[in-house]
Length: 118
Image (tube, rainbow, N blue to C red; front, side):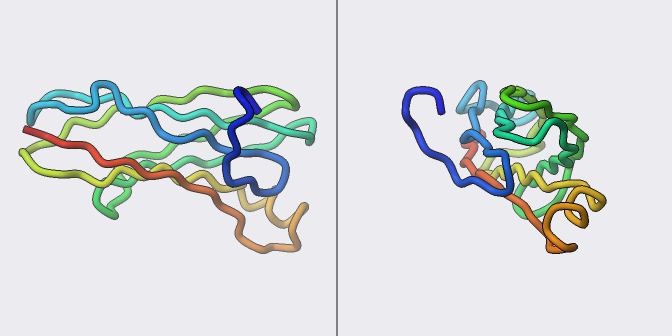
C-alpha cells in the first residue's frame, strides 16, 4: 500500500479513505468526493460504488478493476442547504463476482467523511 498505510480489505481489493474537495462549501456549491480502489490479486473484477449522503443513496457507478491497479473515482454532490452532511461511499462486488468468489455472501467496504456546509 502507498506510504505504508493500511485500509480495511475485502476479497482481493481495498479502498482508500475519502477526500472532499473542498472540505467546506457553501450551500449550492458542488463538492468532489474522491476515493480509490486498489486491486490486489484477481485479474479483473467488477465493483459497484454507491454514494450516500445522510444515509440516502444519491449516486452509483460501476468500476472495472484490473490486477495491481489503483483506480481513482469521483462523485460530485451539491448540498442544498447549510448543515453537516455525513458522506459515505460503499463499494461492493457485483453479484456474479460475489457468487463466484464467496459462495453468494455479500462483500462490501465503505469509508465515510463529514462535510461542513455554510
